[in-house]
Length: 608
Ligand code: G6P
Image: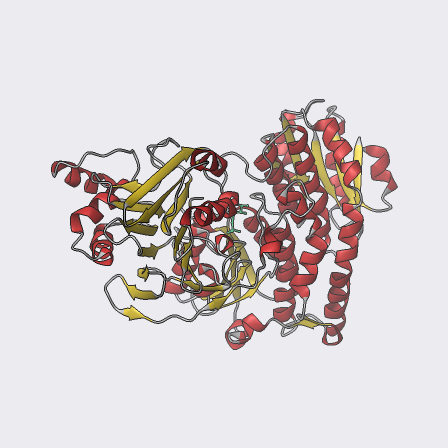
């Protein structure tokens, strides 16, 4: 979704701003813009479409300015046009603002400003902010920002500048992330650390209802009601190389191929093989409360929700907890009865998904213990939960999540084992699970080696209008995830279904042009899955099976089969999902889609 970058220091600001925007491209956007300032005034540039168009617009311009702010916009209010692109300005072109989030009372504020004679230039909710800044300016930009934000309802991460004080950036947040990057006599700001890693590894995250004033030499943080704040600096553990494509054509493929490493990173230092238990430092501070839990609710969105669904089976198998799983966007509006015997575990790659964050806040308000399983270190969910575990998977850039799903499944097993070993899981069960967990990187390599076969299967079917994905038990969410991957990046309609429900509806769709991907591991549901496959084949539906190595009879039955190694039942989804990721990737490639930046999607969804 929308991205913010800002710079103030001794260097030329424009190349830094553009570079920062490029680092944020993966988040999803449809227009971009920047404003750069010095004592002689401000220059603003805005384009529809890619940041590359901004490069074209800037080509050959002499832009010596050393401060500025920039933005990528993901349209909410008003179409992606140049006029609607940020930065927005006031009627005198002296105040500029970029904004992530939604100003909920913008209609009312707009009417009041129009009554004062203000003429609006865009259809956005954001533009009210620039006019309010002009209205309240008393010679100190932060005063105007403070007064403006007191009138605002909704969510915001903003950066504001004025030609009156060209070497100052004021930022503020409520609900949308803002990160300060500290340099040597220069300051950076962004909505996401990926825009900063090239310049500094020292960052500070603003909390809700805080603002910061940045000048080349210093920063000052205070609350929106003017209390000074001192905040510790965070060291980012990503390197710029982590977010480079290296030799891969797309980030999604790179991240699929990183998965053996992702599994290792998720386990590193966390496996106590001889004791058959895991060691998770991030949960230690709350371990006494965690041991007393009777119920666990897993909340998340998108791919993280599918990981949560798999997690339910893992926790049911390994612990004595009652387990629920729910979409964060639904959970937060339920009439909840929670107390300290309920744990609410939020799964989130970004740690910024607004619905997941709101779910955690609601759970905490009602007295539950909140836990996080998050990839981005220092993100809001990571900071706001009582305890948690990081994926340590490095940046995930491809909008369609892959390696984080696998990482989340590994860590869900580790968390469940930690709790389960205080309950009924035996030493030998714990040791067996951990032993197989450590085999996974090699087994994933074996699946990746089958990429040419999977590409051939994608070639055979990529012109289909629709796909069905079927699975049972732990493989039902894997089917949902396979369908999600395919629709996200190839735009082929795909549905995931619990195979037992097939006869209650989707079977009416089956014909020779409607392929089904059937997840048919050798587990307790095997025979039932084979029956489902037979029913599809009896109606001339093509079937691609994801089966365990050595399962010849499936090979003889279906049109196409991709074999995955067999592992511990609780770990099998980690292997079964890999061919589905590759299938989606190759289908999208053959259809010529923009794989890493699929239309309309955003990597991190920071509006409700
Ligand atoms: C967006 C992304 C998905 C992701 C979901 C949840 O929709 O495009 O890939 O699964 O948000 O994101 P989170 O960061 O909370 O895991």
